Image (cartoon, rainbow, N blue to C red; front, side):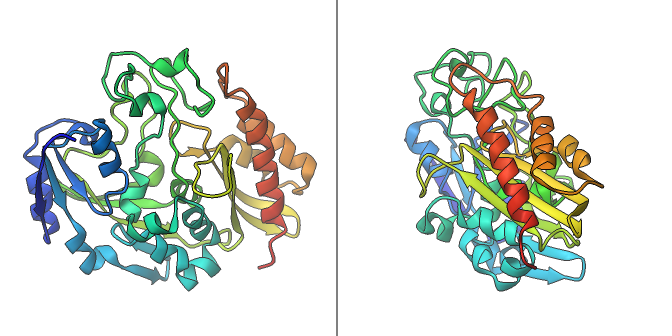
Length: 338
């Protein structure tokens, strides 16, 4: 691990000013980094993948609004420093936003969920072995060096949202619930506060996979808002993995439905373990609206969802696995008793 200096900050604006001094590098490459739970950052520091010169510990901000769960008239407001386990176990989230609770409960281990923050979780970086292994070329870690996964063992890699520069999978679970429920993100940056759709947080790899988000240098996520709606209580997450515990998804689906009997008034679908970013299957949603949700309709929606898939040598099975995961998620969500 590269030597680094450690600072603490109990003032959000001061923390942003300190991080902004690092210049205009993308946040993932900046020499000054924020740290809260540290469950992802410290892992990559040990591997030599992340090499910050300064870590700014922002946990003190959790004693302020940034560490609170608030139920508002229009929905749910989550401080970015709320711990995963706290949100997972919150009675109101369990009752009214089950897909949020499920994506948190099925992520990592209880010990990690006790430490990891919600803001840090959505910014976690890929577990691609070629990204983690510094002996391999990786455009995400070292821009312009190439992508070893294209011709390597790519069983765990993405089939949606890929480019010739990167096929690394986004491995998070919680983000799938947020993108399905049309969440928004609030941030504090050098230009002040701003709010934008969660779907605009992550960037497709394109030719610059090292630029992973649309955050500005020094910008800090402060809150995540999830709007209430007729679909939030009928929401569900299915995660398929190689082993039942402490494993990332091979394929997953977050689904939220607004039904009139068996007829779909509205559908929200997000796919995990399959794409380079949190992935919203909007064309599949549109195909379901106004139709009775049965197995035939679910299969048709799954075909549409995976029409743009670009499988590689070892991960072609993910297309079939992803379709079946989505069909199961749709039918299980329909069957929920609410």
